[in-house]
Amino acid sequence: MILTESQIEEYNTKGYLFFPSLLDIEEINKLKSSLTDIYKRKGPEIIREKNDDSATRLAFGVHKYSESFHRLSLHPKILNPVKQLLNEDVYLHQSRLNPKQGFGSGASWDWHQDFPPFHKIDGMLKPKCIMASIFIDDCITVKSPLLVLPGSHKEGLLTSSLHKDAKGKGYELHHITNDILEGLANKYGIEPLIGLSGSVAFVHCNVLHGSANNVSPWTRSIIYMNYNAVSNACTKDTRPWYQNNRDFSPLNPLDNDCIKSL
Image 1: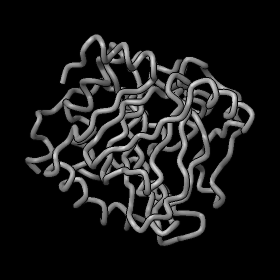
Image 2: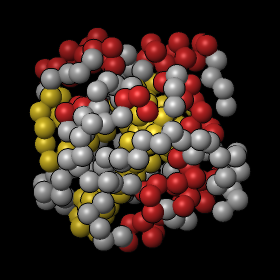
Image 3: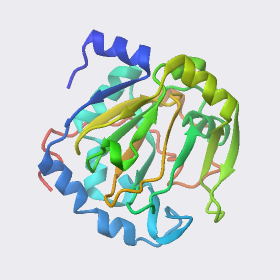
């Protein structure tokens, strides 16, 4: 997939591009078949929900231990647009799967940017990083979709406070204060990213985003793959492999059927 000049201009203006149903149902079903084994893992890379130990909040590093998600990270429909938007070779800094399980188990995410922890903790020098967000489930209004402030990436690195998860598992999130959020929301507006499974959003790492609790009875799984420019490789190794990948080798795309051929 090759982006047009108008699409690149849209990304630079809004801070994201959205492609409905970019992956087909056969590819999505291959990915879904891997989820049970992923959620059964016991390592520190699996973070449980604060109020429900049976529910997975995040599965970090899935491209390292799931062949289907490894191939997803190299899918030309995902990798090529990222390389084009960053205008250079990339590596995968971090992958994380957020199941956002139903009946309220899938808890909210406060408003934040992805770049601050990458910059302050991992030593990523510049925001030359894109969050490819692939919808594993249908992400519709009733499932508390991802909300973004289009254009907010132009504000640069915002003032934020660092929080760790309540159980001390070591993943960090930089929360934006309410007064900053209100001002930016009034300036840029808020848009929901809504689409069927297989839809993909390419989001600048400084776009402000968040989501509410999923009180519907259905899951709202999204895999987030954070690609960083090779020239922007992180300089610190404070966090473990599943949060801060230290292999900066340039990624090359597989063929279009790389997932279907599993």
